[in-house]
Length: 104
Image (cartoon, rainbow, N blue to C red; front, side):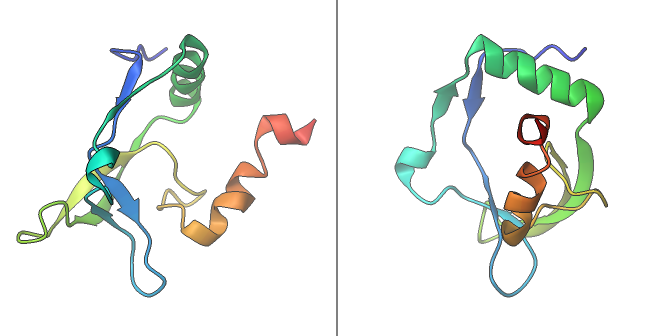
């Protein structure tokens, strides 16, 4: 099982999914979005179990975190669709609708 190094998450980038065009990595929207978020033990355990079953995969994506120097790179994303592509905004409800908790 993967062991996550700490019980916190850091917001340094966001996945931007424009109405037209391809998703890309960008800066968080506001200054307050750059933050460390505490994660409960249950959340850390759930992420570790998820990563055990679905390891993060590299996806080629444009990184516009520095808008002056956009580049394409491989980013390891936790949540992908069945084709190992970025989950688009309109598909999130379909993806989360298939979680084990909603199948009960």
